[in-house]
Each structure stands twice: as structure tokens, then as C-alpha cells.
Amino acid sequence: MLQITDLSLNLKNQPVLEKVTLRLDPGLNILIGPNGSGKTSLLRTIAGLIAPDAGQVCWREEDLTKMNAKTRARQLSYLAQNPIVHWPLSVRALVGLGRMNAPESAAQTHEASERVMKICAVEQFAARRMDQLSGGERARVLLARALNVEAEILLVDEPTAALDPAYQLAMMEILRTTATAGVCVICVVHDLPLAARFADHLVLLDAGKITATGAPKTVLSSPKISQAFGLAFDGNGHLML
Image: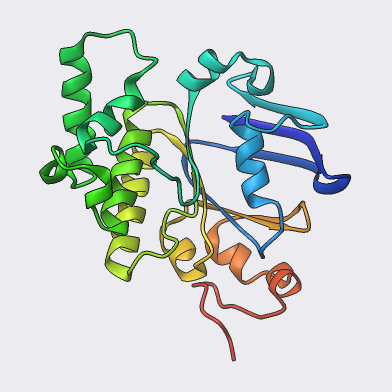
């Protein structure tokens, strides 16, 4: 269980998160909300990339915000939105970087990497360089690297951004399968029908505050949705005209 308690964050003297309190269990937890509502900042704070001004982020009663980087890296894996690969690494080499903190042999790293490449359907690209892949292919490779950490918490920021519908569905299916295996997946998604279809638990953020949590149909039919977006949606995330 991930327990967030009274988490507050200010950036450039502006409040970004205000006393966020939230419990997230293993499963596919999807964060939704308008642009600037604090979704990415919440992910980055959980990941330890931003220090909060107040509050705690605890996993199994251990405060993630106070862990050293190496210990935290074994507890969680983070896939940022539109990550950039700066070197012409092969797919296999990049996916293998997910095992950097694993005390294992090269053979074990190879075996683990092959397994997640198959899960993400990128094993056929293993010998190719990252700069030779399409955007959708790169997205699946980067997810494979994140999965290769085998962390109990997986943070993913807008994994379906700029992908065509087939890649969007494939990405969400992988995340759902990962969550079903007992991982606490926390994912930012802007596409509300996708969120409704795949989430076990939805969290609505608005202006740095959590305004609704729960089952997708409950959150998406809440009046808090229309307050946040200025639009009304049905329980499946479709716009009501």
C-alpha cells in the first residue's frame, strides 16, 4: 500500500500540491485532471525527483521521501512523459539498464531483459538502435526498461501521448497486466475513455487538490469532473453534449 499524507509542494513560490492525502493499493491507479492540476508533480514527488515542502509518501510504512536514491530505485520505477534517449543504444542495451541495481549475473540480466521485451512485443528490435525505431516502438521499449526494474511501484506519465489507437491500447494492456500481477501502477492519462476502460481506481486532481477518487464510473459521473474540466462526461469517459 502506498500512503500519501498531507503532501504539499510549492514551485517558484506557487502552490502545486496542497495537502494531498491518498491511499493507493496494487492495481492500475490512473490520475486524471486538467493541465496544470499537479499530476506530473505528484508522480515526480513520489519518485523522489522533487522534495515536498511537507507531508509523507510511505510504501509499506517506509517513507520514500527519506530513502537514499539507490534504495528508492529498488522500490519504484519511473517512466517520464516523452523521455529522450541521448545515445544510440541498442534496444537490448537500453532495456538492460533497468537491471542496474539488481545483484545478479550478466546471464540473469539477459534472461530478465528478454522476458520483458517479449511482454512489450519489442524482442524483434533487440539488436536495433533506438534512433531507428518509430515513436510507438520506442515507447514500448522504454516501458520494457521500466518493467525490467521489477519494482513494486511503477510510475508512468502519459504513456499513450502521441501514439496511434493501436499502440495506445497495447500500452494500456501491458500496464493492466503488470498491475494484475500485484504491482502498484500509478499512471497519468488524459484520454478519459481509456482511463475508464482500464483503471481499477481513478484519482481526479484539480488545482493541486484531490477532488474525487474511486471506481471509474463513480469518478467520471461525479460533478467534480465538470468542475475540473468545464465539461460533463458519462461513466465511460465520453463527452456529454
